[in-house]
Length: 237
Ligand SMILES: NC(=O)c1ccc[n+]([C@@H]2O[C@H](COP(=O)([O-])OP(=O)(O)OC[C@H]3O[C@@H](n4cnc5c(N)ncnc54)[C@H](OP(=O)(O)O)[C@@H]3O)[C@@H](O)[C@H]2O)c1
Image 1: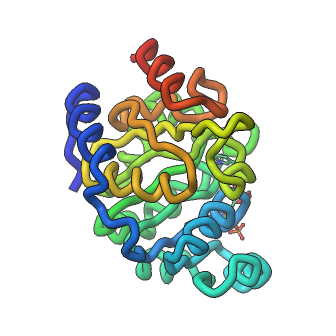
Image 2: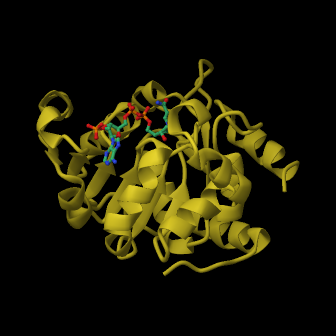
């Protein structure tokens, strides 16, 4: 169930959840990626290596043998329906233009999950006509409209995919932050645990309405220290 809360209340609740290690990320979670391209296979690979069973999915799962072999023992491939049925946690990692179709077929199943990471971005040259509408509403709220009741957390939206398999430290060894936005406190807590497993540091910046800033081309895009993400987020509303 999605709980709609103000940005301030969400920040307070989630600060508590993110600071406590209340969710046992050590316990394996079944994680699926919808989309097995640059983002899906990189993040899927990191979580598989951390010990979670991972299913990569796409419209052509039979073409994912090399990706599965490269990840190793904890990985397999399936159809989108198989992957969503399998998972506790789903990572959406498709071009935004695919989202309405995925929502039409799978919104009910996605609403039953513990966490739905939304790494997708509306990109005009790639995604076409839907982009204007998505940007007008804000991408976080638009994904929530497509997937009513799903425990959505926007994350991983504006750092290059290859970076996720290289650990979350900058050249000086300092942690890089991943800004996250969502309205469901339990999902945000679990997201925080799974982000820490990638080596990055989760930084809660607001509810799904704030998710409009988590995409390429905004001041939060790119690699920033957690303290810098908080400073930038405080200038946005
Ligand atoms: N690349 C980055 O550095 C990066 C960073 C942050 C966020 N993102 C965002 O993450 C999303 C994915 O980016 P990407 O770079 O990983 O893209 P990509 O490499 O082009 O991969 C896209 C994946 O989505 C699958 N796909 C496309 N339409 C689908 C559908 N209707 N149902 C199921 N699977 C579908 C594709 O497989 P099939 O065509 O075989 O179905 C492919 O596996 C985008 O929204 C992007 O903006 C990307």
